[in-house]
Image (cartoon, rainbow, N blue to C red; front, top):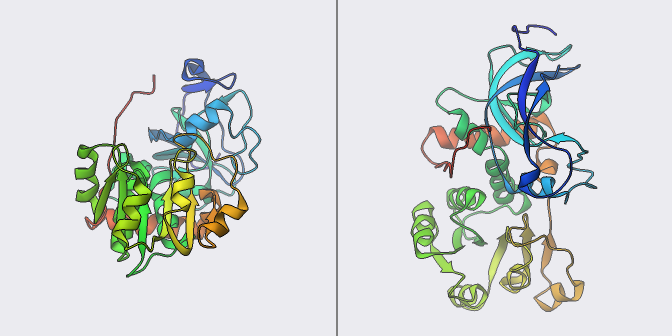
Length: 316
């Protein structure tokens, strides 16, 4: 290893031996991994806990080509910390650099090996907790609002779970791009939070039919795009909340993964479009990853983007 610090032989890591519920998670001692060619060893300061970690733990991505995983495994799909060693040819970073990353498994540990092309530098003024939160959640909100559907002044969008992790960031980015934002929330308290983040309108889905409310707010036209992270319980009404030739983006499954869409239903809803993207395809190159992350960090540094940290846990 080039430029490595003195490192311990062992570390603590949260690992599973089988797919299943959270009771299968174990804090175990494991060898500190060694970076290979083009890889960097990061001492993890903060790891993010996201829905994808639950899906992976349950085995829902066991056959995924995008998020390949095999048992036994160390959990965790994003982290932030300090470079402590660089493998052969890993010359883009140096020991001591502050970095963050995502879509590389193994962050629920004291150390993790990361390909250098998956790392971004964390600027001074951004804490490790915010840097981690701006990876999976922030990068998802960025590609949803900038690329999967390019919001612009005059666009209308429906954001489910508008007070949540991705939802709250997506609301803010949508407003920065000039869109009219309608958000669904689960309570009056969350409605207040969503409006503070930038929602023009909020719908409490437990007491209102969000499709009827959207059509009322848009004079019957529907929205240009629906960002649906809820999945099974909402997808049919999300599709029916679109304008003619609008786009439904399903990017999560808080109520359960969407297993099928009837093609004719897309036509009946107004010849609308449906997509189920992966973040990995929108940060496929180091250049695209760092461009998106750089914009997010700049927004945060300039006070245009508020990063919420829901809860903090010790590794154990």
